Image (cartoon, rainbow, N blue to C red; front, side, top):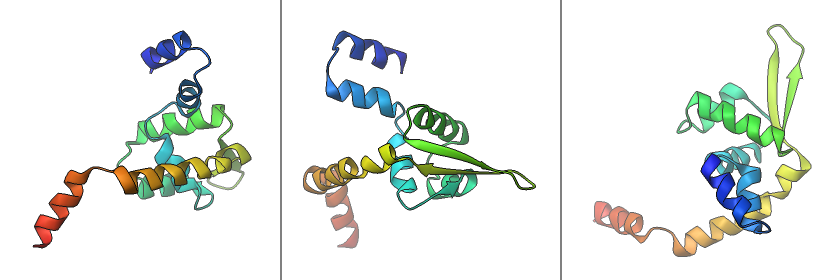
Length: 121
């Protein structure tokens, strides 16, 4: 990630680089998409995005929280509960996720489509 930040500094003013710096981790898109379903506790998020390892999920949530996309709310119960939700800034990213989904529907990996067709034949 440090190399990515340095490359972006060299291309100062690039909006794509700015987005990548704000999102930070490769799992950020999945976390943001999952939190669009509403607030979730860590273990719930981990179950719903099982492809992401525990430490990666922790790092991604911290980075998104630091960049004001995710809100971490500590609920003083016994045991303490921690709930993650999207901030207004995070919720606003939904439009970008929808556009990315449209793009992948149109241009996504044709090999996966070919494989699924050959498996059903």
